[in-house]
Amino acid sequence: MSDSAGPPAGSTRQGWTFLTNHGHVLVCIASDPGIRGREIAARVGITERAAQAIVADLVGEGYVKRTRVGRRNHYEIHPDRPLRHPVEQRHSVGELLRLVSELEVPQAQPEGPPP
Image 1: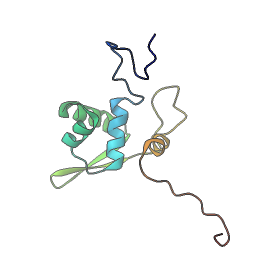
Image 2: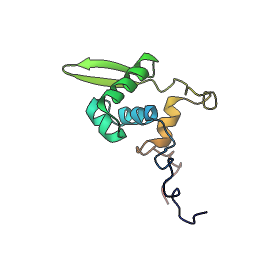
Image 3: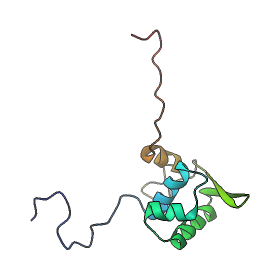
Image 4: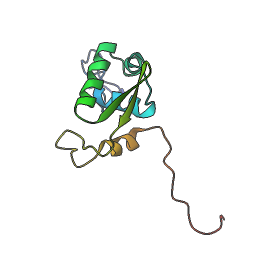
């Protein structure tokens, strides 16, 4: 048994993550609704063709709306859609994005004058 924090040398499970590529693509679109396919691919670490297929899946299932604006696509996420796996179905895409986004969520301001 190894004392190191990482997986054992030669392990085939070194590259796993908590989110799937679909989740990563969704996060990319949420952070930049005008993102291009090649930018998604580069950020996620997949091919441009795989990024296009994932976007098509998300659009086809109603998680993302794609609108053509000139020569570019603009994306809109439907945050009320439920997550797909039975373990998470009671949660929405919007909840997931709030958890993993880098956007600061405004905190409720206390009532009364500041201390």
